[in-house]
Length: 164
Image (cartoon, rainbow, N blue to C red):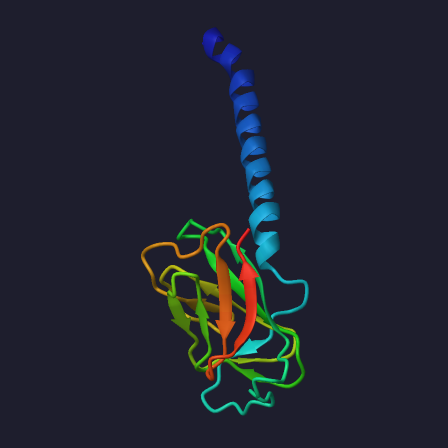
């Protein structure tokens, strides 16, 4: 019985250290990966079947849409591209596509972005929502040094981003 009482403080210290290390790792992960995914402005994306587009797709007109980042390049489970619209009015992404240097192409479904709206395109499979779209691939697409390109339905490049 005396021997068990000697181990009790060590058991408590072990539990405390394990909880502290786990908390520190989760904090680091949240700061490192989630911070890059969560945009500073609210995400305002709405899926709609017949949403009118207030944005013209004239190739000479600038559309303020950007590829903000490519997160988790090379890791299928975390790999995603963040696209943000900073223009006025609505932007209908139906028929737009995202492609890499190897011409792997993701075609956007019917989706409307509003000013300051953003959408994440995950490489892996999943269930589409208004803020998360899933490519459904079984291999990662993005590599360091590669360029991600956002192209409108007329074939005009609207945004590019070089994967760090």
